[in-house]
Image (tube, rainbow, N blue to C red):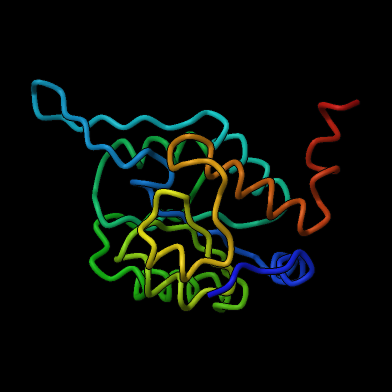
Length: 179
């Protein structure tokens, strides 16, 4: 799938009402770290969190759909005010479809950011498919936009900025800091 022209990207971005994110490899660097007790640890980038808050303030509903299950994901979602969280999803396409039905939205209003094979059916179905540079070539080939930053290293923030800029909302989103 070819990357989009700025005009097409802007048109698609304006139709987005929900942005759904994978966790491992998108909100984190994809590494799995365990402490000596076998508890999983994850590292999230603070600027990704700010980007997610900016999307919420712009009226975009946020959701997480991930194949793994971790209390850390629930904690991060609560901290960011993300109410729609699906963990342990063996079929991300079905999970996203159910979420869209719950929200009374359709695929034309959905952006999705994922980085591996379980994300591919959703990337192929959603209106705006986003990924990271270290995603396998097959995934990048099905994305409309590839973040300049890697997973867990600001990729979500870059996606938020791109969406807000393409929607013409970036200046308003940052006005409170610019005075």
